Image (cartoon, rainbow, N blue to C red; front, top):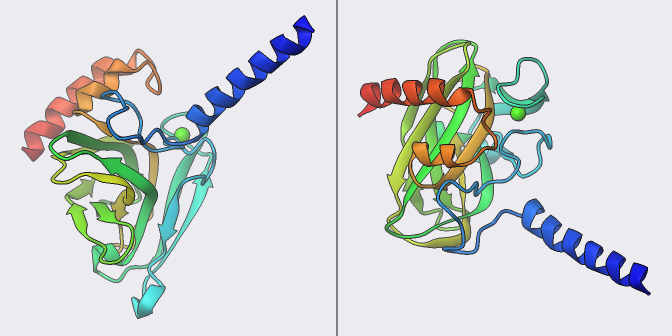
Length: 221
Ligand SMILES: [Ca+2]
């Protein structure tokens, strides 16, 4: 009897733990600053959670592909490679994104990720309502500097409240230059709030990151 109860409790704990862990924590206001609001941020679960709008829809004339790349990831064992077959010249014609995200009006949010590209190319932040009328919430052009891993971010204040009804991602059809993404995070707060977590960064990355943010901020703001 004791054994059965123990098993039941353990199993229930596992289920609760699993449901929190597996799903994106998106109950409005329930998250902490710095808590990750996207899943599979490091592509260690391959393509789970990520959606490529490949640019071929609606006679847009673009074509992009995505694949998991195990060579030279920035974090963990895998990263995402976006292959540009054909650009259209209009950034939103193709996107890499994650659906069902949320934000709360008046709060600050950060999208921050590591990227490298075969040559310098631009991507654009893209937060949008995930159905008609496709309301545009937030953008911002980001210049990827080239083949070395660099961290890039945009911080913004949410102008409205959206619950599990928008995507967070990048518009990519302005260029056909291949690029890689890893450690792609979206959370409430500023970049520094990311450091309140031990995961995903190794401890020794802190000093380097802080320095880098300072220089990026200097360039960008
Ligand atoms: Ca990774």
